[in-house]
Amino acid sequence: MRTVLRFLQWFLFLVVALIVVTFVVQNRDVVDVRLWPLPYVMPAPLFAVIIACVLLGFVVGAFSAWLSGGGARKRARELGRLNAEKAQQISQLRQQLEAQKQAGPQSRPPAITHAA
Image (cartoon, rainbow, N blue to C red):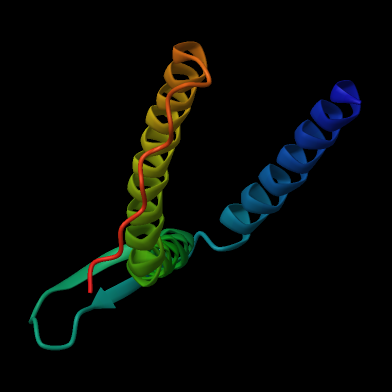
């Protein structure tokens, strides 16, 4: 199974590499890049401009997704802390139960009182 996945990974890599190389070769024309409020003009190959825009879009999208998941990550941290506290309480209660079992049947469990 691992060999098949590795073969599939290499196959997909080669297909994507072939597509990228073909794209680069077909789009070598030089274009002028202008950023509207600035007076600067920079000549650049068309493929570089397109790839830069795609990468910028990917980074902005990934950052946006990361920001939107902040609430879920915070809740997961809180639940993890609560889980650790409850696990510690369970451990302490088990130790108390073992101590009571070893003390013998003459010891009584603590009385439950209700505060009003």
